[in-house]
Length: 468
Image 1 (cartoon, helix red, strand yellow):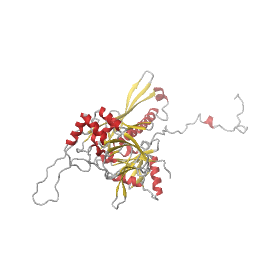
Image 2 (cartoon, one colour):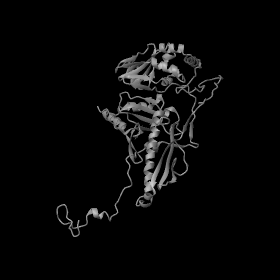
Image 3 (spheres, helix red, strand yellow):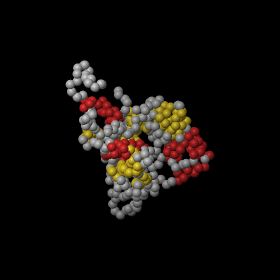
Image 4 (cartoon, rainbow, N blue to C red):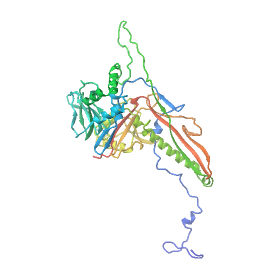
């Protein structure tokens, strides 16, 4: 615009007052601190009881248990062909601790694949058990006879489970329940005949089985722990049994895990652009938020100490109809005493809400830290977006008893570390380099421990995309 030229508005009229664009050059704007979409509620970090670990390691001492072979079996799929990973056969009770790779590979080769349609019977109650079934894909129901003669579903098994394993050690074993495919199911079958043939040729396997049969039968409680011999209700002067409580010889130790990053800030930014907000503080604030998000993700998904990986097999249950129903949540609650909380993906909570709506049920809610949280049987259901959702739109729901005194799930950290800004989280100045960039080392130490197996349970393979 040349000198003396009149400013006109969009309507062609002369401008009569100062425009907003020019006024902003002389005004101080009201602004927010930097925002971040990644920040979530992080209920797990807030509600998990934290125990200070000195020395960086926490040891969980338990009573000696004799239960073995209760893990999951992993498969590989090539096209429509499924194969079991040979080392995974060591999850079967008869092969627990056996490590001869050549023999395990031969056993894996002998496994033959078979598919079953929904509703098809895989094994019949009362028949002789001649084969062990490895469930590669699908869901099967264990069906027994109810108290009034009708069929009763005793349990549901899914990917990675096995059944009929008694056939490998007991030639007289019979099926104690009927196994029926609930969905399209793929299994791998290893016959007792093939197993016996390989054992005859393999000295190491034969010696392993002989050693297994020679072990004295231990009297255990329902948890697999050595039974404490007691006398009760007696009269007179009978001999009182002698006993002791044995401990695990090699208890599990949890080392603190770590999450770190190096934050870089140019000195020019830190010196000149610190009003009205301190740039260094805001950069550190957002970095710490991201670190805490990763910390919660690791507590859920880490293969070493994550909750999903450390749940015992007998504490994992499958939904009876795929969707998370009130019956499934009740079953999950029944597996432990004093469940303190559920953790579920928000989409799983929505799916559970749809099932409640179908039955005309209205869940109660409680106010926690200013938020309305839905509950089931009085147990809060906290949202947690870190629980993964598979491409098939299935996820998991976690139930926990928490606290060291209740033999529950606990978080591990170490307070008092150098340059600590929060317990077990430090920001350490690392100096300024030749490019005038300030560096800070941001570190968080953490882990989680399950004190007894029934403190943690998981409802697996929950469908979240069914709307009918």
